[in-house]
Structures are given as structure tokens and as C-alpha cells.
Length: 225
Image 1 (tube, one colour):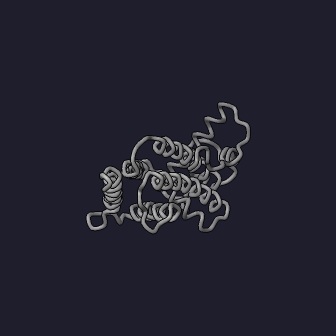
Image 2 (cartoon, helix red, strand yellow):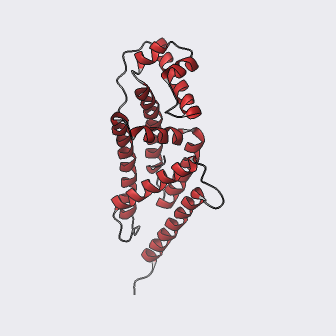
């Protein structure tokens, strides 16, 4: 989610693993990889730990030993992927580029995350969070982390002279998060097409931001009478 979607160092807590030897660490990674493939193939509801164990070529007991439950296994996958993406976003936002250029990169990341399956994993866990308190809590921590990223960017843009009109940085952050998450959900449902061009529309927002930036720059450089 290109949230859409952190202040440096904010990461989602992962299940506490038991101390692992290098051999057992390899087993845990095999389980994570198999679970991710199973999730993308059939979704969270249809996935079982036995199917994951069969796919990974390990005894079912190994899943319970390393991860405890199906939910914790999937949350471990999500944490692993999300932490790397948070770092990616933090690196991008550290670049000395304009808000419109950052928006364009966020759209590029959306394309990449749809292709990699990260968006599907995220959306599957959102759905699981509707009926699981543990999943809901950890999903909210993920969205809080992404929200901090967006809030930092919005506040930096405001300091740089970008006019958000009546919107506060927090309101802008809420709207951006909603736009990206909603677009991701509908794209996964197959709703995107020539008549409903979600990603094209998102990139148009970047063009609108660039126009605002250009107007702000012109106002700053105009000679004062």
C-alpha cells in the first residue's frame, strides 16, 4: 500500500519466535514462503496450516512450533513485507524531491505492490481483521505506521508552501489513505478498466499537485510592487 501509505523506526511487532538454529530458521522461511503462495492462490479463508505444511514440505507441527497459529503465520508474512516497504517509503521521502514527484513514486509503488502480491496480502488481512481482534489490532498498527509517513509528508509540503485549502495535514492524510486503500480493493475486484481508470486517476492527482506547486513557485518569484 503506498499509503498508502512512518516515522523512522516505526514497525509492526511480530510474533515472538522461539530461538532458532540456522537450520530451523530455514524451515521457518520455507513456511513463510509457502504460506504467502497459498494466501495468493486461495485467500485467507480457504488457506489452512495443513495445506501450508504440505506446500512447504514440512510436518504440520513445525508451523505450530514456529508461529503458533494460522493468523500469527500470516501476520508474520505481512510484518516481513510491510517492514521492508516502510523502509522503502522512508528512503523515498528522504529524497530532496517535490510532493508531486513523491506522489508519482507512490503510484509506481502501487503498480509494483499489486504485481508482487503485497496488496492482496494486505487486503486479505484487512478482511480477516473484521472478525479477529488480534488481526484487527495489528492491522491498525500497520495503518498507523503508514499514516505517520503520510502525515510527515503533508506537514513538510505545508511548510514548503503547498496550499491544502481548508484541509489540515491530518485530513489530507486521511483522504489519501482512503483513496489508495479503496482503489486497491476495487482493483483486486477487477473493477479497473477503461471506464473506471483508478490508477490513471491517481496519477492525475499528481499532475494537479504539480500545478499547485508551480503556482506557489510563481507567486514566490513574482516581483513585489
